[in-house]
Image (tube, rainbow, N blue to C red; front, side, top):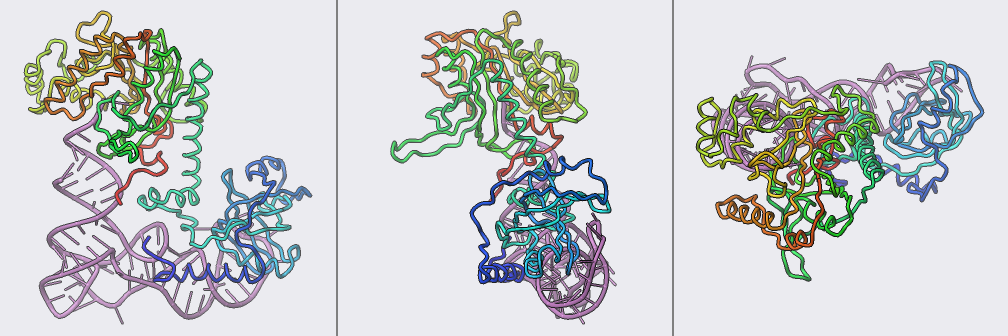
Length: 487
RNA sequence: GCCGCCGUAGCUCAGUUGGCAGAGCAGCGGACUUUUAAUCCGAGGGUCGCAGGUUCGAAUCCUGCCGGCGGCACCA
């Protein structure tokens, strides 16, 4: 990665530069403007599926892509051309092209982008091919591509230079094509169910809607600090007050936290809110959405994502794994003693909600391979969720887990402004006690609630993690085009 | 932040006890009219992540730093 055009290791670059200059000297433009009328390679292949080995056609096709391999030289050669849809073999013949054009075609470098007009035939070995009748250089490649058989394996290079990963790897192209299908399927599903897509501020004067530390930035003209959003929740609920009834936003959130296999500092989040719904309605729609998206994106994994998913209350989930009933240990020290008595670590500085979270993430989450809703969380862990209609001290909230990973968080939304104000007060107390993730007081949000928000259910779904589930990847970096890296 | 593993040619990788830094692909020169990782001949290509140290001699041993991966901690 440290080479440059004039220094060491430049022999390979110099050779390509020489070719570039000789092309220009021969009057060939190495970077032409366009190449209209190109057919996807997959479409060409599909059009000749029934062609037998050794059979020829008179059908001409125009294709374009990157030169990936070359076999043979002299009077006849075979080239492999790759576009986004697939790969096809080209046959170059001196008796078709003439000596000069043949020489020009064969002196192209692997990695060059070319356009070809060719006649379809199937080789004696059964390979669908195009006999090159005419070709054009579409863009000269001035750097050598990754190795043609082993591809690009170095993980660091694949992440820092995703373009090389993509141009070298069919799997990489397929993965990000699948990701695109997931995202378009999400939109299609929600659009069809009466939701409208909205865009709320990324730069926010006050952050909120999740427990996380924000990134800060500065606006020069206004001379003030802004936060990059950690969630869209509070703005979206203001739209419910405004009467939009069913809204969703699909976009980036930013959280100033550590980086690991399930966390990237910027990540793609889906949130939707629907009036007159509670968390049971949300759970049902969530199940259907994931099943739909899985089907639309060609999911072939082992998980059964079809509704209904397993449902377990948080308290029962913890009870069955650890024999600790958090309902009987409502006091912080009492719970800590119960954990210690069973040999579980109970960090001294942890609050009661943090101890519960410890039990959940250490002892429950890893066991949740099949899609599962964990229901009903303690009030103190959920400042924006509505009190449970019959379970004292709990809220109507669920988190959805798949493959041992949290992929969604949802609740029956708190719409009582006075109760919301008390929850903010409690958060302020936590902040005073040093909790860096406590919610800041958002007066504009409270005021909005005072105008009246309908009973509402809402959810956030981590799209990167959903893509991980649907593509069987264990690291979020595999499903993010340009994951965060050190400089 | 802590622990472990890793960093060698453009790419994929070898490199023995510390003893002249290698192969394949790619590239360069040449041969070749049905190849499929084409084949054959020839000549090249290196700051062994960076900086120190030990040693007659370091890719190899030691220390520090940079970067990556995994784990722990942190993390709706």
